[in-house]
Length: 604
Image (cartoon, rainbow, N blue to C red; front, side, top):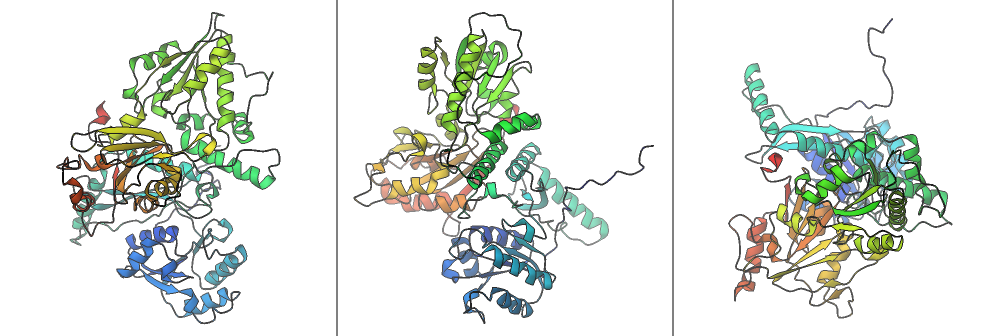
């Protein structure tokens, strides 16, 4: 007989929202993650105390800013009684808690790599102190010392006024795929109507009227950004999230810890890049193949059967450009190749699900496993797979951006050496399409007379020499966001011995835009100036690869009423005023963030 009620199955979490008004959130540590947690607690109307070593001078810029504005209280651990003994942190914390009332939550963030990184043993001692005071605690990157974890959250804005509303959503995978949780949250947000936040505000107001409160709606049910236990999401230095941090090339001397770290990185890469449909259909063997991460297909090895009853006609190989991501920007030639000609599709990992869904279900699709530290081996594997299939009479479609920093050149030579002359079908390059989607012209009369495209990453991860500053030129840098700090340093370095730039240094106030996931529903554009862009990216949460940089005065040329006088005779004298006006004045944070596509693309 069927059970009357469902049987509980473990593995989930009890997802809660805390009302923190008139209560204190205590945060240990003073880095960017501490600042992120502090902001979330402030939005939940909590009082925030930051307790950290090294003084306020060692805190990140955002925390210093909030302390100056009395949004956050800062307590210097080194000035508390008993701190002369480095082994007495638990006693010091115990005394501090005894003198501080209303602490509702504690968050330990200094277990990341910082100048005052807390050891595992010390974290355990502090966890026990909090437990003795009945205070729930989250310890970053040490799940056994966590009473609660964070979901990946989004708070909706009013679609007309831009004001934040009471509506939030949170996603958690309970530690099974932390980067995937952040991605799912973005996709959920992108699929909801723009008016959903305003609708909640209206319903809240109506509810308040019904109960006779006369208020303006319910308060926010705050759910904070995801942490879970995501070693794969965190830099060792606690910096901005990115799955593209370089991983050393694999070697035979790799130990067990290094192997596990690499596998975690590859899991993060799969979570970020593979289409949802692909993730859902993975078999156990698929998973083993990803984790094995073989560098090459061994000579003489047998490729898996593609299970086609194809006639043994002469095979062919097509290299097609798949555009920046939006399926409507595929050329007719590429669309025909994918939907009518292909027997096997070998896809770049950046090709989005919306494009892959156009491929008929009977066509096999293989996605390149070009993860950091495995790119060269994966490239060889894909080329060998293409030749093997073509020899069996199949039409192979290799899709990505084949020419602009793609692999078309080496693939043409490789296939030609194996008896196949591939057909290269150009596509719409993201180097031009992404700036257009972001409202940035790479050339504009009165602002930019030319543009140059370069890569931020050389072969096998080596640094590249970047072009120097020319006022009337736009610089487009592909594949460099994961190395943003190094790129910016190379551009603005004024020392005579610098060798990473060919030409004049860029002024620190030169406009820059980072465009992530161009043409996709969760596109994001972060705009600032060179000296502030690293902080802007760090303050924006997890990165959304693929990303690119646009540098030059064209970035602000079409903002609002426009500014096309950059190249006027006295235009340079107006730069300071020009930049302030663009970024919103002295009280603005120094950058602006724009989410999503312009209205109208949903119908195309």
